[in-house]
Image (cartoon, rainbow, N blue to C red; front, side):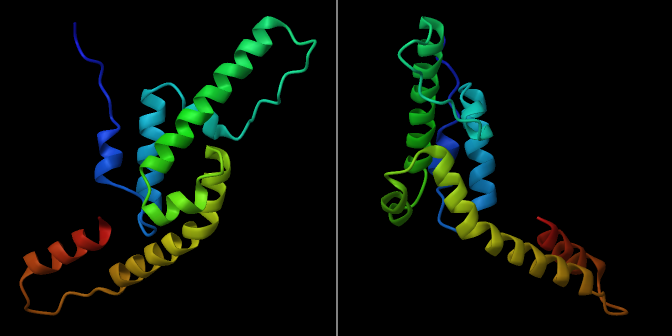
Length: 141
């Protein structure tokens, strides 16, 4: 019997430490998409079912809560310990909102600094092309 493909090891290699928020979030979305649980990050939280709800509605809510819990666990497991402690009582949606508030501005500032350096880079007349191109590639990546 063939083993199913798991992408969770990319999260082990790329734990969230702060400055890598954009890359980490991209990896979270990839893993959850592969596990068919990415829909929980869309922000459309299901409301708890009432007593008069149909069995299908109750089942759908239980599946949603289970998937949300699994997404939350994947997120917490792939973050640094200090961030785990800070977010352990939140669900996946609240974690993402809080992390965006914490790190998205820093990521934008860092990208701006890199782009500024990229656009300001000039090759000196008579200098070799290769080091300049490598420096430019470094800024782009």
